[in-house]
Image 1: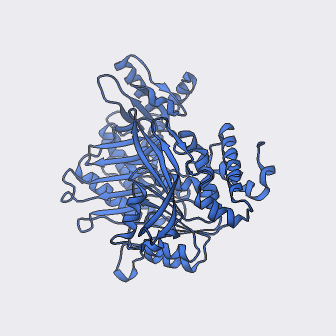
Image 2: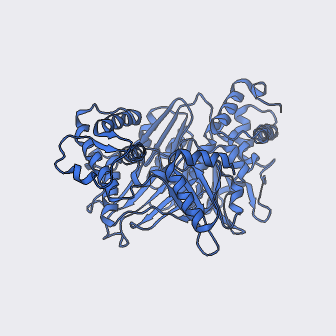
Image 3: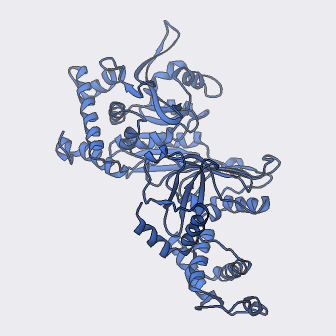
Length: 547
């Protein structure tokens, strides 16, 4: 804890000072102030930690033997009827003046307009005499609202939060340590913290009406309006996070509800996932070779197993001069390549104007991409994906299946109906699960299977396991070493090796490069990308370390 940093934060943010003083009065101690959280904090049984997520917002994680650990948002709030009245008055005035302003082209321009209108509507004075405000407001026509300097900062924050940000949810939408947000009715908001797990919050709405209005506004801003006629909506927030709204109390008896799956602006890097134990450097090196040589890969698993996180992490392995074509229902994949065509389905509107994943995949086949990425294959679009593979277009996708047998059953059964004889167009299936081990939830790649193909003699698809996770030792074993169908029969031959077994030396080299990145604590996504792409261009000489 840095006491100097805490004092400085309290000096800048009076609401933080007030919160900590009240907390100290009750609990006779002050929280630890941390600017960065580490995964080791997970071991603390009763945390008492405050961390900043950008002034004026702070998060307090606090639990005791008597109370459940809670996620507490500390932000400026309207505390008195007078403050609430002033804020409403200023907001109304700004909304009256806003139509006469030019349409903002960016959030930054929007913020400038709000500040300009706010200054027109208000007058900063050092002190406002008590019990005079409501008297002054009677007969109010065009006089500016008198506010103090501290009120100015508070009102400006709340205006930006409500008009540009996500309103009530803005503080937790900014927190980089959150994975999911779950709201069931106006008084029940929980978050899934990357370190502390599922936590209740102090975020609430007045009643179901206020929450319903909030969701209506959110739906309209996403371009996916909700109503009693269309109570269930999927969409994407401005930061790319995925949201599912269940609006009507007919459908959700406990009140309007929604779930947000957060996505960070910068994806998690492959070296970070290795350091967390999600998979090994050998697995990453194997995937590196597969993506370099145009193999089609499905990343499979159950809900919340980390499929999309793994998909985004391995995308830098695709050569930098590749054209990437992605098609999704909601934007989740983020290839770092300069030539990336991103397409999103359109589910609303008249039947003839809708655009499905099936339509996007057909369009992809005409655009000559080096890789096609499908956010998630669920239905008949799988048939087009397999057609794309058959015509030489590598495909990456996520898919719901816990093991290779279930994957093949789903692909070959209704409604997908991919013929078993087509299965060898898919080269690799990676299976990742969220596993509960020694009281912790871990995300682990549990197996990687290579698809050899359909054999008439056995009337089935032959697969070959190349990596296996050993739960008792929490390690990954390369069971396919010197026995990999994809490495020897596909990649080594395409690379022109005289002895196909030499491909394993190349895999070891890639693993060493990844090990060195981890040893040098290179975990930033774009740093990792740059090293991989430099290796493609300059070989070992371009690396910032010696192998």
